Length: 331
Image (cartoon, rainbow, N blue to C red; front, side, top):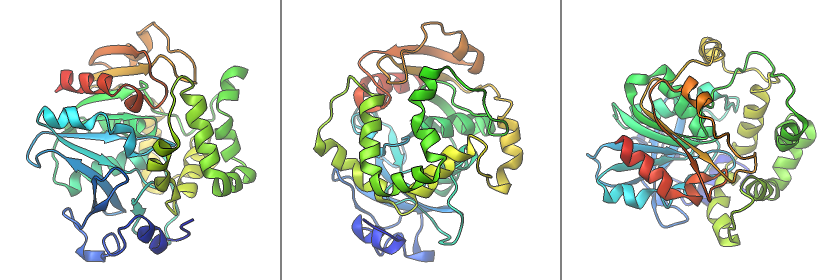
């Protein structure tokens, strides 16, 4: 198991690229991902972000954002049709995943919702992208939702996989029905010392259990999992995950630079950019409501809302065609 930044970079084949210091820029040296794609690196003020890029560099950009506990491989089926349609596709690894690392080795490892949204804007800035379309699920959808709220002029359109995903991190939520509380066991687990130890030593067992339970109708192979597994060996992974789930339950402080933003997000503002909401019919969190009123209340420019059959929580991997169709409709 990679235990520090240098060992991890060597393990994923990019030692000497992300560690190039001031030499690292938007056209950094690349390495090979598990699927043979080229991993590029770009530097922001806070992060060295690893990403994969496909299509012509001057085409309209589309950014695809994964969630927990997944990585960029969730979008492997989404990328080729979009490239064929003439778009530039960028698939970054979120903070704490794959080759993406905080630049400051001594900085606290934090992953509150406002931070991952800012990472998205910083990523676009570092690549000199003025405006882009975005699709994301889980953490990635939360980042996209918040970016669309705070920087609507930057977001051409959004595919919100899972719907509105902005949280009130200032006040604890009221207890939910027992069945839902049980589904969220991992969040309560990560708020304990035992959860930290468990994620540190048994991360792949935990992640595979979540994959199985969140997408109970989906079958994947050991080889499928191994293509993503290196992303979870990032030396910041455990700390980032633990902070994310503690901060959202008001059990850990956030970054001071986001205090005002979190206050704004606590009001759960509406999203005004053109959006399509996709919800998974076979999610382990339960079947989505057929009533669109909740999504209509949160997205003021809702183009469509679709319940996608044959898909669990990792919807882009299960039904890439549904994501592609939504993006092409918006574009």
